[in-house]
Image 1 (cartoon, rainbow, N blue to C red):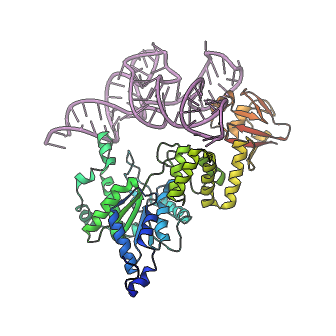
Image 2: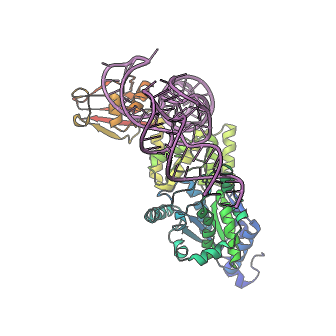
Image 3: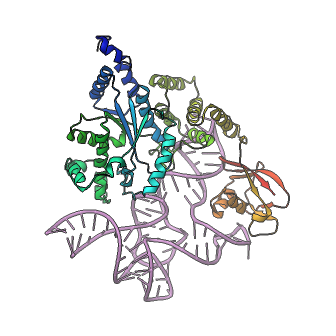
Length: 427
RNA sequence: GGACGGGUGGGUGAGUGGCUAAAACCAGCAGACUGUAAAUCUGCCGCUCCUUGCGGGCUACGAAGGUUCGAAUCCUUCCCCGUCCA
């Protein structure tokens, strides 16, 4: 495309950046673009006509909270939005009740309507921490899916072949492992394909595990006489354990509504090697910028800890603002580097009234820890104590029967392990 | 509908009558080490009570009953999953 070929075209061209520039921005961090030439063609087309591309991301509100893993692909949707394209955020309120078989080794229990609605609401609040709420088109797939009748479903299903459906890894491995597959799970990709048809999307985004679904959507769109969307997938974010994908059920996640300090601590606990992919997928740093940092660390000019601190700060800043990020960082330094008490160490209280058993006015330490919520059970509390994880006012106590005097009101500092520090008020 | 195989702790998975709160591995937790980590090493890893002891009690191997001095292990029924055949 030559610049300024015709005046009419030129006007609309100003609306969008040059295709190459857009493409570079969109490709950053992407796992796959299928097929890339088509995306280029679509970008060129939109630049010529001045019509933005319709780009959508479908999310099933299966849990009430989003975590950083979800933001990877949201960020990509935002990139399209930044470039002037139409971002459509689709809430899979209907499909959530089927459950996406992707990456699942067993059939999920279907969600209830009320749960889905409640989740959808909190999702939206969280999503707009990243997307521009003014410019985002929000849809729900119950708009059309709940209106389909049996005939529509049969027609839809006739557009796809069982053998192709069974090609997907999730189904194949479940079959191989003698795991159950319910028939309704086969419907999931087909019904969500209906979304793509309704939305007349040009591009659909998804995590790379969604590739199969996105491609079915593309096929079905064509069956319904549309051009066929481009599928853009993003890599799966590895969770805090550095092994498996970030997910709430695995507990290796950072929720985006989490407390700033919690967030900071969690990110600091990831391994050095993992932080590079976090930088790529969760920040706006350019690919070259990241590469340069990496070289600096390798050369010994920059300490990896510094890189991680700045990553953690950036994350907290994204969701809680700059002030919170600064505070979290300094607290963290105090607690972990200087081994001191963080600014906002919680205060818990123990009074004569809420102790159980033993002598008047005294409690065993193990019992106190349980009551204070510092240990899930007395057995666990005893273990912690015996292993030297518990400190009172800086002194390690190894005797679970250490008695705490409840008669003298005072405040002392309790430390359970490295991560749990609080003040104890005795009343 | 028939034949066969299977359901064990957060996960994988051993265990076919007492030595089994249940091997092993993974995950998790704690301590040491460190730059927060990771890796490594050490210990722990159902709940509860106390006189904290290689202590007592309770709960646990899909569910419910039964046999037995004693059952994850044997029997019966039921539920669930898979494979093959129709």
